[in-house]
Length: 374
Image 1 (cartoon, one colour):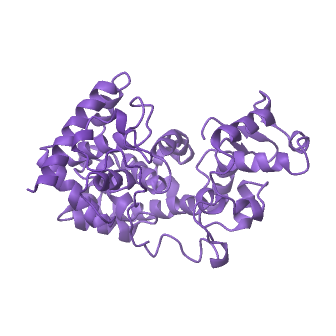
Image 2: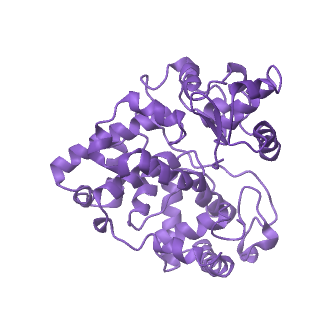
Image 3: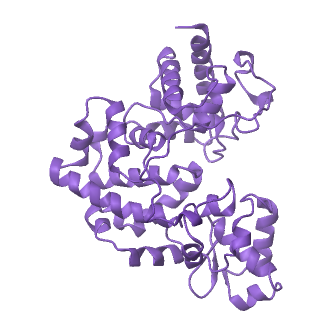
């Protein structure tokens, strides 16, 4: 064990104590309890629901995905594998229009496809738990999930396994950022991130799943669990309990995100024509509607315009954007096209478009309806 690993293990223990002290109403303690059950303790429907949650966690904030899951579960029949496997494309679009599911059509189609894969596994193994137990180790299990299921890659496979009780960690941008700032990583390859973090957790005498939770909550903005993240994109070094152990304290440099080879089944010709794929990172097209053609986007957002789709997703900052949305709705739960037109030739349509893209509203076919998720 080298000095860097020992130093990071000590920091991990201090951060654990910090989170326990700064948690909101026991939220941190409850968070850790989610990993108490073994994979064999869960039902097939529960396991499938967690698989879907991991599918959507790629590219979205965890808190946003968590907020959507109750509605998604209801829309997909309580994660009933047999019923979801029978769904058709004609059943998916109405769910998007009514705002009952996250509006990512390729992933929603993959939910149905993955239910069919899960049904095949049930026929072969009896339960999904037995299928998961059929692998010799976590590495081969994660690889098997990537091979079988759409929109499950090296990072989201580990996310799924951790969420259902396996002692592993999700090598995402939060763990990568922390390890880089602690001087443990120079790159951001998934395998390197995972191996390095596992060694730190082992040195700390801590389950890897718990260590993952500690760093996620320390680096992410989960204000539902603790009073503000510390080691986020712009670190709050003045509030950090491990400042003296951090070699990059006070430095606000950009941190690389974990890199992985995109699985061949993550996007395919059937999802969107090549000309419809994102042309730049962090645009509305690539962030809110990845892999979707303009025609497909208009099915869920009738105010879409090819020019607006290419704007930076974060333009018209969140506070200003929400002010525009508030002005559009003026306290009403929904507004008509006539009301949208009242804001001017393009202003109303632009606000409506961004409200839907940012999940502040959804189009029900007749009116624009305000939602609580953003």
